[in-house]
Image 1 (cartoon, rainbow, N blue to C red):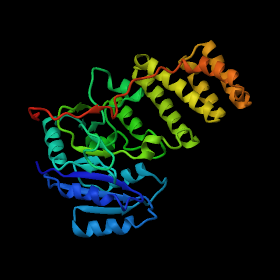
Image 2 (image 1 turned 90 degrees about the vertical axis):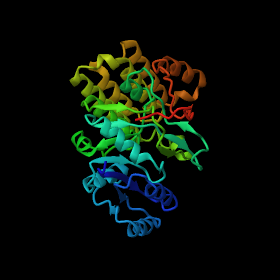
Image 3 (image 1 turned 45 degrees about the vertical axis):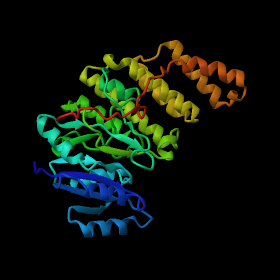
Image 4 (image 1 turned 135 degrees about the vertical axis):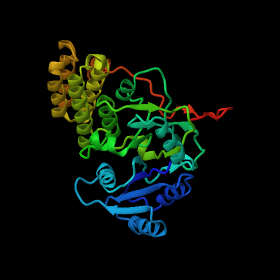
Length: 344
């Protein structure tokens, strides 16, 4: 059980938080790790802080981003390219590992040695590790891709422990996205298909920090973020058609298409709304009446007729009904310590 785990971390202006993350890594009961950090051009004293950390432990390896585009996914990929571990764990600079995290994850990976990745439970917090005591998510009887498409993903990027070779094989992080990077990664991994298991019966081993900015969906309707969502939607439709599973997820994809159209229209990005509708034509996600309603609502917003509340309300209702509201359990289920510990 001495296989190296490479902890992969992008860093940008987190000098005030990264030392807490570092302390949790240094406290691991499993000693065979390396922490590979890639700075994304920080403008605070993050690089100095990282240099001080690296000077104290040779297992901490620091790099600076050497290529475009700027962003966490580019930094993560650079870190993977420079890591030496058999396994990789993605951890942000404001999140914290439980002391037993690596030990638990490596043991589970060894017990599921035929898997490309294993998914583990995580807790969310704001300031103190126990101030929320809610799980990122729980398992249920529903299909995992269905849950991703409806916004109820069983994990985010830190949830799995990957075999490095499998992660590289699946294509690593997509660097051109501004949103939903983990959505893209997990959809393509499951459809590849990569083999995985969920060990959400185990004790949560990572603490995810929830900040105001992460909850506010800042810039959600901006052009770069909308285009990233559209890119993932187009990719998902195409790969599902290729894999022969599109009809299985047709309702979910239709819902995504409706949500994207409404997001584009509300955000004033009318050409993007038309691009979505054009893409959807051969898939027939919408009937003729629904397409007409979407286009009418687009015109209402484009020519500012929406200022007339009765007109806005009338056309909005005709299109909004196409989005089925999905139930998400993310951050809503309290963690209860079991009376009997779960064995691996």
